[in-house]
Length: 366
Image 1 (spheres, rainbow, N blue to C red):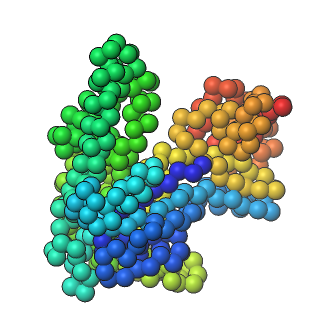
Image 2 (image 1 turned 90 degrees about the vertical axis):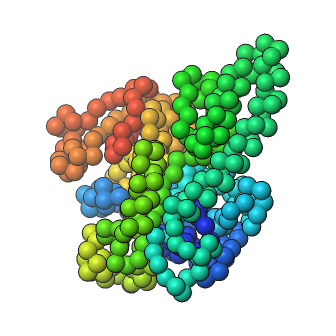
């Protein structure tokens, strides 16, 4: 499943440092604007204790975790929607992602240049949001002018599209993102998705703080939290510099010891990867046995035949039924055989909506 999150932000807020921690890739990181020009792409393993537990029980020959793609995109500056800096390239790269991790600088450091001289994460957030909204407004207005003409001829499809575009235009002119507008009918929703508006993507604000603020945050984080109150966006705190130091440690034990010393139970990177996975509305089902334990990624709300098709298209075409074991039952009873004997395995048909953590076995005939 090729869904990906884009890491965005102004220059020098810590995007590439964070990307390096996430992917162990060698994205260049330096103290000057536009260090990142071409987007760096990393395929990130999603931390999941459930898979680790299944491996302990099954002792499989191979293990395949879930993954998510993270893209490090060049820093944006004021005027990007008009082509300033690397504006057009930046906006095109965002359009190709499915969700946004918006990194905000929430630390003071005289040795790291800020593109606008002073540290003000709310201002920085508003700069990028404004540029995305302006670009979306341009897209909507261009489409609306053509669509209104067709709608006036009595074209029902054009009328629906004009209503969607008009609703987006009103929201964007009021400074609200496209994702704040909801549509009721499937035709409206389908057209809205096909517009690929930048501000229609789900967003997570990542507050990059100093070492001392890694646990509780600071006044900059408080300002951001207040600014996004009442919106559908969420926030998390990460100390990218600290995370880069953790990533350099050789063993799991050393990393855990480091985390405990600074008052954290797990790394910010692990939390961020899971947050990115959730931001994309992804969930996980498992296949588990002596040959392989594997985490399979699916979109929330997926039904059993489509989930089977993730493994192989033949599984979906010839779907007969799904044999489903709940994760908790499997862990408690210790084996598939024990689960069956306890009557805890269910047999589900084509309308079954797969749940996060389900252990699945598909029956099919092609």
